[in-house]
Image (tube, rainbow, N blue to C red; front, side, top):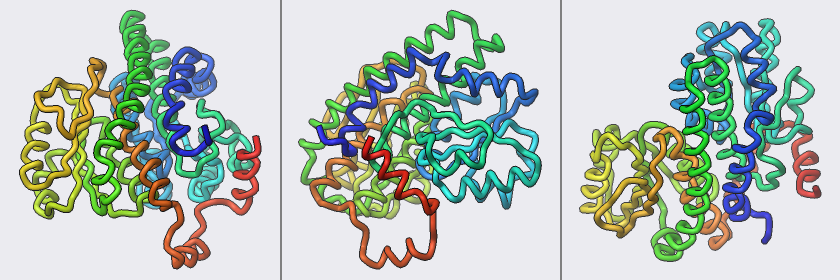
Length: 368
């Protein structure tokens, strides 16, 4: 199989399962650095899919670390919130290792005497020259710029990191630890199931998805990170405007723009209420293209991708993300839509988001 977006979405479950089984070795360096730092609260600085991944893991981390976890962009760190997190254990993330904004933030930290930890998907990226500790978080060699595997393995890594710290600090018992590990293994299986079901789902609604030209992603809890990532992926691959909303925010204004041309995707894994299902059904009275991703029992399976997986809500993003990744990969290939508008070159020449050596590093990755 060609190593394109579809390939990396498909193998995600295998890589994730491998990472669960080697979790102690995988997270050892970061766990030890954190526990020996004398710091408690954590600040993660990232952008793009890395930021979305961190936001997805945030609820689990806050819940099980027993510490405050702050997720911010490089701009937020440097210009707005530095004073609030200056005493935190700081982690910067760049999947490519060549993100200019992350490197700029690292240089800013160094001027203030802060030594951040760095996570990356490419140990040969430019970032290695600017940090003392660089950790590859378990993605392996993803050679597609529209990252999918890199995003979900980063979510998993941050969850595993929090889990190991929580056990070490005795925040959770051995029994609780084992149950969460079992749930994560179930999520890896659900990720594979999600891929298989996404193939069928995309074939069934192919015409609607192919013609989709505006969309809204609705979620809550940890899946708000997935809503952000779905919005990003649809935007950068399908080249369509996409809004993401928390479920109650959606019904307080954004829903008023609905016309029959809209597509709205709901992610509902909240075991405490059926409110989002009701909103999904109400939306279906306005538009034909209302879709639901859920692990809860549902009566009507039309336009619904359902999983029978009873795990912590904070872990469900490990499989809910797959549909959006697969749609992005498949429809973009079918539409031959990877290239941006010709005028976009003017933007790229003006605003640099990768270091000068990125193309050379990326080419080397593809040749591996």
